[in-house]
Length: 80
Image (cartoon, rainbow, N blue to C red):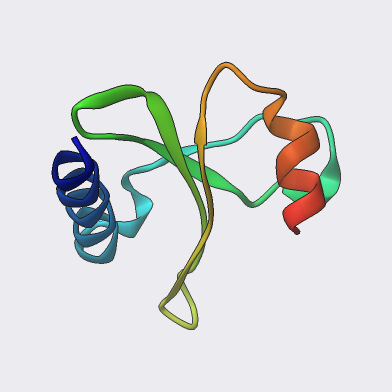
């Protein structure tokens, strides 16, 4: 199971590096989280990769990978 998880995370990150704007914008109430985007982890439909993409600087920052049934806004606010 650990190898499957690692391969899925690798796949998600590699896809984001190739297509960083593919993730959906987050719709959180907190302004500090306004620029976050997210994608599902392939093969793990309840897990999400949250990230920031700066199109001008061409940089991608993975913020957190979380199980979707948690209080995402609170957890992500603590990370930013």
